[in-house]
Image (tube, rainbow, N blue to C red):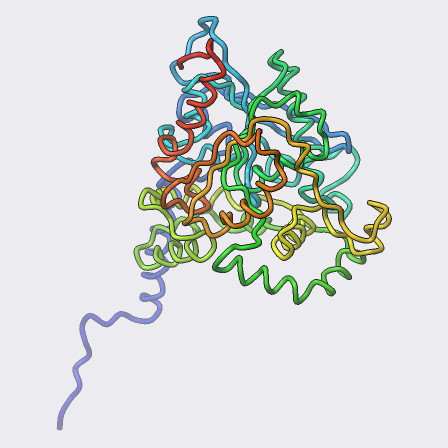
Length: 418
């Protein structure tokens, strides 16, 4: 008779479960303690690196309360009587001002500009994490979320610029926009041409409309055209709602564990490639927990639909509210295109062939033909950058923002060295 001997290493089921729970708890505890920047806000991130920061507020003409963060000088700067030209940095879709300060100081766009002698102002559009107040509307109402990039350009940016000018005593500013922010620099001047006098130069980083985008974006663009009739019904019957709020409900430690685990890291890398393009070798994967703990930020369903419209038509136009809605808003059946010929300031454009969202084909077909050629002062190809690398790559200060600094110094002879 053969007897079976139990493996001495076998644990009872309840002990196995307890063992797994303890290990999982330890993993989450380690993740939570790995980097304090996961759980602090933008002003705290700026202060953590030793920079001064101020929080300012502007009220738009339609009642939204916009928060703007200011880095008035660099980390080692002294008041020496030199000039610090003001610059407004405008963020991309589903982002907020955190995209400009998520990296360490040597590759943080906002901090690099502050160290270079700028007075830096960081935009937070309505509906994002830092701009969720209105004089008469609450975020739990559909009416609060009835906005698109049209209102960003027509109301938010002018309010921010006027606040900057009144704060600094300057008569004009520099404008740096990334992705959606780049497009807004142009649509603002098309809609509010009087603001040409308040802008010294536009620096458009990866200006996107998504028409020729590749990867997941390309699939969404084609899908949008198929479901547009249903979306028109949604726009006219259900109003608009908040999107991207789910990120605030997911524990930050969960995102940290997922994107730092060696087993799942490749999924995070693959998702970046699928949506943004192949990242540069200098993409800072060590900062993934920081990125995903602050982004995505909020926007409205109408704004996402607006981007679907832009990508399906390759025309930079106002939001299409359907024929009936367009007649009420614009006095015509179709949404009118923006007249980019109204842009009358120096324009500098940055792009990359590795960027799957902001394709050169779209810049060449939808932007350059409309802006008068005498205002196009520079077009710069950034090698091997995807859509995020402009703000996340470890060499973005050298590849992108040093060029902006150089161009500004040509105009600002008395600009601070630091």
